[in-house]
Image 1 (tube, rainbow, N blue to C red):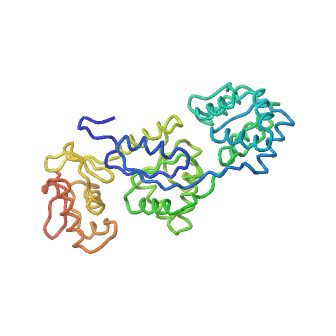
Image 2 (cartoon, rainbow, N blue to C red):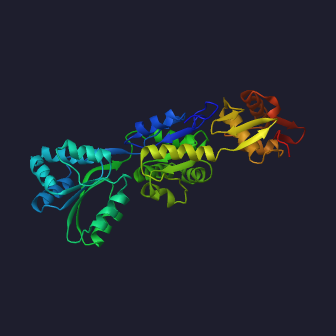
Length: 370
């Protein structure tokens, strides 16, 4: 959606993406909304085609057929069938799956089920594990044997809820999340969050959130990262399970009503725009965005140092801010003459020198009527 001035909702904002699966899809959605996107994968998927746990779970299911099979991801379900084919068990697995009630968490899982020549009996509109679990519990699972295809990490709440309701559960681990093969991009993304050049960090999985925090901890930046994600950077999660590692260290998050990638992108856009300061100075309407400002409907790109000065001046519009305060607000600190340089560049970027006033021997202020 473009506003009346023709400016995209995320123009002037930079968003970091840590996802492994669907990173390109999320990035494309954000770019279409005007964002600048930086990628720093926090995890990677390791298939377990030769894993003894997957083989054991498959053999167990073939020896003792199940009543229900839960497919949580398309890539996982396909990987399971492909691994079984490699062991010479493919036909037997598909035959057993066809006799069970197949539940798919989302459209990709549905597609994988149908690609195997099977059909699902239920798939929640929300694409969430929570709604899938609710459907199972409401249907009654006591005495049933249920196979749950995991998606990279255990699903303790999901599995234990079924067991408490009287079901026997077979966990099917098809692949796992591990750290990125090249940690450099994630390392640089964390630096960008800390230096103020990233405005939002959406997460699509709990492992990605946990891995990001772990990288910061290993490199001595955890406290600084938690502070930035708590007070300055918008953190969005596709759902409460994804948010759990962040909530554990006190980081607040926003979440869409529906656990979908598109809804996550819309939530990021809406939340960033809502928290953007808006004010009037020297007769001009100004909206501060992460890496830019909109002045009377015109998007003005602003470099990091002058943008930091503008944010400091806008915290209390009209108040005189001393050079010392502004110096401490600069990304790299510096001497007071660095503030003068940043003020000059800010006036040039905004295209109106009168927006920022010099108060002799005291500092600077935005030209806001008090």
